Image 1 (tube, rainbow, N blue to C red):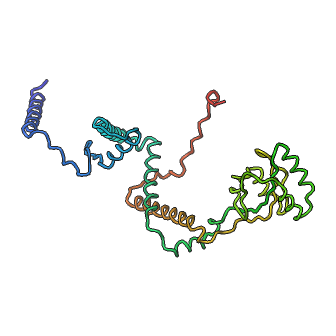
Image 2 (cartoon, rainbow, N blue to C red):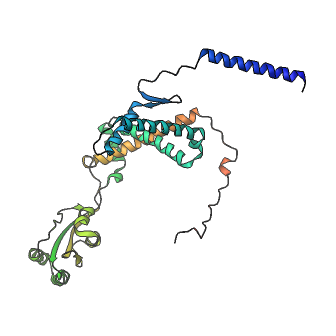
Length: 302
């Protein structure tokens, strides 16, 4: 080896030693001041006291006595520190960009923030809700409603007695007399125009289906259920119609807040696109679509 490279190596070693000595002379760098609202700092990333308090509250809620001793406090803090270390490791590995699940969680988190902000927005003026209600009335249509009357036949032979009674009914008076003579049911059937769900809870799916499909004035076949059988007569039916603003206000407000969230999200995305440097390949839109992978027949569940 020539003398020149050895000389350069010696100079480099001397410079390195001088720098190290200077660092030792100055001592370790002082840690940055702890933020007032932080309980710890991990690689310059603070762990908020509120986060620590929420974690302690969650642990206390899972304990029968709700007690939190110093050992538990230390474990919770260690868990938050290790969580932050794992988050930083994941970011260093690029998982936020490479892992589809992490990307989806990040997108969902941002969307959730936008929606939460919209939910906390001041309530709109009454005129805004009225305008939305008028502009799109079909969004606020009631569920179809039906009015029924029933006759109940209790006992194991209820179906047979209901069928025999149905065959003898001639007119409205006959139906009224039959209802007066029938047994009193143990459940209360809603009266007046009600949505199908109100009947479903009492009469069950078969009778409700009959109430929604039979012509007005028609009487259903016996509907067998626990303890007997029903006859159901359809007295009236309507498509529900559009609810008045006073009735539909909760739904109108929910729709307004949804649109407010959509508007805020659109503004956010537009701002981000304007600030970003986005380049598209000349043939980006012509990129071929990869064929979906064929399932291995040996792996398809049977």
